[in-house]
Image (cartoon, rainbow, N blue to C red; front, top):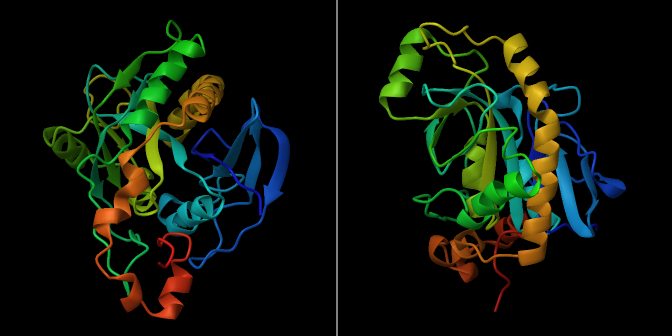
Length: 291
């Protein structure tokens, strides 16, 4: 089995990593099915990395069709401790402009159709999501912009709330205005339940949200379309590659501690001895070893 310290989830416009060396494809099957795509492992400056295209090669999967549990479980099987997510978003505020990037620190979950936990059916866990992203990984992403020499090329916003909708349709005007009234900063379709599952898997998670549009609330700017979003994403794809590589170097060198790494210490309710063998097998990559 190949192993990796850092995982990268590529979203719209980021379907591979050009900086990976010693590239291999890993085919995994998890208790929750197969991941979105073959996982590509390799090294960036000697640091072991696993890359997964969230929507599959050729962008074949709707946000609601992404096998989030399989994706995160597969990363856990590979030994990933830090997970960096790249996602396309719309802006819900005037000051966050298309082609800006945001490192959100909060989420609002408006999804309806997605399995959002590994637990249940014989094992109960309630992990804290008060601080849903890892501060160490967000810090690495922010520093990566500087170390990649991109401070003059892009405008980065630290903090803010990512509101996740089900999709695949974009918002109505009434919805967009409502989301703004909730205080959300950006809107997307993929970071939940991804962030929740990463926390259950005790993987430190953060996202770099690449802004493509103003959704549909802005009275003067164009309403979002798929063509507009993809066109702006491709303008930022090269920057995203550089930021990913720089963040990998930071995390791989420093290997910071994270609250995520011990999330189940206080979150796992069912005692190990009370978990049936079949359930233990299903959750083997997540559960602590037996005493």
